[in-house]
Image 1 (cartoon, rainbow, N blue to C red):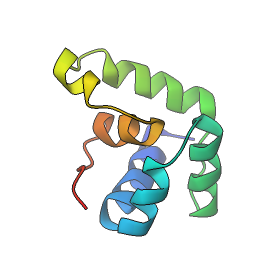
Image 2: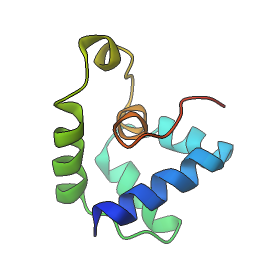
Image 3: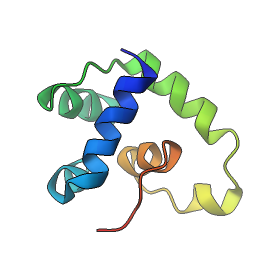
Length: 84
């Protein structure tokens, strides 16, 4: 898995309202890994968590308070929009 593959998956979710909804509903990392795999992306937990932590380290408190799910956090970290 590469960060590029994770970004490609999130870009797909950004452009697909149904996929974005499923991503927002993810309750844990396993849900995200499974969802990415179902859409043809090789994503593993360790790499996602590492990239996620690095991206969140520069977020403001305001941005962090707006995150309500794993999916929200990933979408925020990798530049995908929150709009439907």
